[in-house]
Image 1: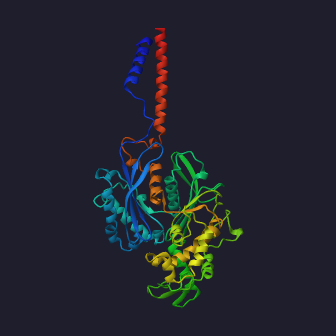
Image 2: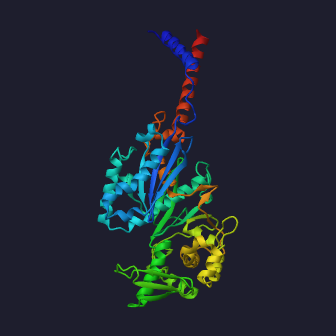
Image 3: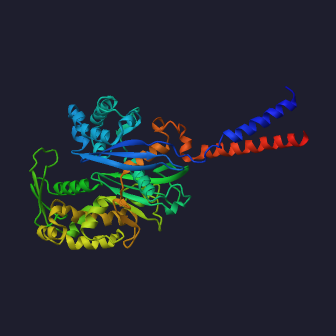
Length: 476
């Protein structure tokens, strides 16, 4: 075939391509809907959350479509392995109700445990998760996609904080907008056993640095988790401190409890549930003195890298104008004590002032303020009302009149749960590629970059071919 025939064929192909082949779409939207399942195995209970996932241009649209919680926490079964299957069964059945049957085999399931199981003996925890993985690998018990052992595991506290940070900023529609880091929200989270802080500092991060990739951008986070600094364990530590100060005593005065309140707790290394009796005295000065012992900073010469928050734990200086979303235990006591503004702003000074007034009440008076339904938390609100301002100011570095903290468990009516951030992280890291709809097998397409590149390449090719054909026609 001579050159003339080649050019003629080339022009014919170009015309056919233009008539019959549309340019590749610049949209990365993928037909069909998929799902993800995350079980939050917390210290007091386990909750399954089921999410729908719709792939869009720069970031998946992930929405919770249902959940179910069971008690007690999974850690209770560390020595009762034969009961684990029965314990998980209601959660798996609820997921099957929410996910269409046809999508069960391609819907990934995760079980991630938080602080409750971080406290369990390592050998027992390992055996427990071996049991869980066996159940998830059994398609009769669990018809969902379970491929990797890491789909059932104990989260580090830092991971929990990072996932909460992703959730908050995703719900606030930060990602994919090209906005500066200063527009992100830091997070403060507190459960029963641990508390977490995560944010993007304005200074270099010298320790506890975590990268998060979302919508094609990489975000450098500082994150740290303090085990035993959660709401439940802080109360346990206060009582352990009092017991240690009065060895041999079976009746102890607790200044962090309201007058008229009495609680029973086992003595250390005891199985007698009534071995110690704690009697509330409502003494704010004595209570704060005890709480302060748990939050002392190490001397400057032993703090490295600097600055330090609690003990010798490094924390960068808080950005002066960054908002922080505080969730879970940061919400309950401040709300009950009337310390939150209409916009949910939590000011440390105001919370402490409310707590100082509240702790002076006796149990009956306190219940009149907070309501009978909250009776069991009456003294806890007193302690937390003093603990949280101290943690925010003394340890983290917020000013007493700071309005940076917003205490809320939702964003525009959508609940804040670290499980959403965990699923988004897995999606963005490509870990869920096996569950993507067949119309979008390439993880790169989720960000739209591949389709845009193909579209540009197609356009350039057509222009070149048209130019060649035009020259051919002019000269022939």
